Amino acid sequence: MEKNAHALSQRDNYAPFGFTRFLWWLSTAEKELIKDCTVDRNRYAITGMTVLCTWLFATLAWSYFFSTVMNDKIVSILPGIFMGFVILSIDRALIKGITVRNKHKLTPILFRLVLALTIGTFMAQPALLYLFDKEIHVQISLDNEIRKMAKQQELDSLYKQSMEDVQQTKYNLQLQLQSKYNEVAASRAAYIAETDGTGGSGRVGLKDIAKAKQTEYQKLNDDYNSLLETTAPGIKTADSILNAIQQEKQKEMITFNSLMNDGFLTRIEALQNLILNNSAAKFSYYLLIIILVLIELMPVIAKSLLPEGTYDEKVRLREEMERHVTALNIEQEGKLKELYNQVAYEQDRDFIRSFFDEAKNERRKKMMVKFKQWNESGEESFDKLWENIKQDVLTKQES
Image (cartoon, rainbow, N blue to C red; front, side, top):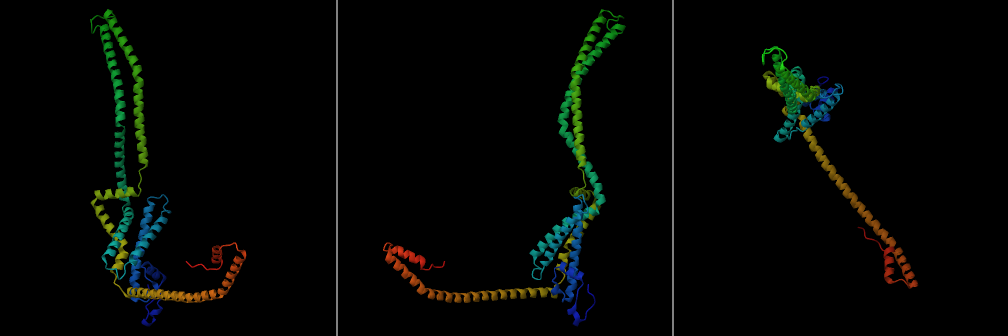
C-alpha cells in the first residue's frame, strides 16, 4: 500500500499509491482526511478491497445472466458492466450510511441487511447456473421430455372428441358394409353348396333351386357393390379427416419442440428440480448461496465490524465544524443583507424627499396654469378641473 515506512516527523509527506486512493474512493473515505490517519488508511483500504471484489463479482454474474438471454456474448458484457456499476453505487451508499452515530442502530442495520440479502440472493442465481452448468443441461433435457409428454397429452385431449366422432362415423359405415358383405358371403356359400351337392337339396348341377340361390346371390352382390360405392367416399373422407388431425398434432408438436430452449428461466427451473431430486446438489446449492450472499454482504460487514478510528472522529469533527461555519456564514450573510437593505432604505428615503422638495414649486406652477386655463375657458366644470389636476399633478400611492 505505502511506498515505504515513514518516520514520525515525515508523515505529513505521505503520498499514497493511485490504487490505494482508488480503494479509499471505493470505501467512500475522504482522501484529504484519511491520508493523515495512519491506522485507518489500511482499514479503509480493506473495506475498499471488499467493495472491489463485490463489484467484480456483480459484473461477472450480471454479464453471465445477460449472456443467457442475448445471442451476442460480447454485447451481453455491456449491460453486465452497467449493472455491476449499479451494485457498486448501492454498496458505496450502504457503507457511506454507516457512521459512528447510526452504526449500532437497529433500523438502519436491518434495512441495509435486507437490501444486501435481496441483491446477493439474486446475484447468486447466475453464479450457481454457471457452476452447475453441466448438471443443469442434463436436467433440462429431462424436463423437456416431461414437457413434451405433457404437450402430447394436451393435444390428445384437445382432439379426442373430434377424432372419436370421426372414428364412430367411419365405424358405422364399415359396419354396414361388413354386414352386407356377410350376407353376400353366406348367399355365395349357399349357392356353391347347392351346385356341388354338398348342401341344400343335395343335387349336383344347376337346378331350379341352384338358379334361385344364384339369383339371390347376384342380387345381394349388386346391393353390396352399390353400398360400397355409397359408403366408400364417407370412409375415405373420415380417413382424410383423421390424417389431417394427426398431421396437425404433429405440426404443433414440431412447433413446440422448436421452442425448447435453455434460457434463464428454464435453467432456474431445472436448477430447482435438480435441487429437489438430488440431496448432494441441494447441500452444495445452499452452501454456495450462503457464500455468494456473504460476498455481497462483505462491504457492509467489513464497515460494521471494523472499529472506529481517528478518521471517523475527524469526519465527525469536520462535519460539526462545517455545520458551524455554514451557520455562521448564513448568519453573516443575513446581517449583510439586512445592512444593505437598511442603508438602501435610508438613501432612498433621502432621495425621495429631495425629489418632492425640488418638485414642489414646479407642481404649484403647473396647478396655477390649469386654474388660469379653466378660468379663461369658463366651460369646464370644477370637478373636471379637479380630475385633470389629479391626473397630471398628484402622485399615485405605491402598492
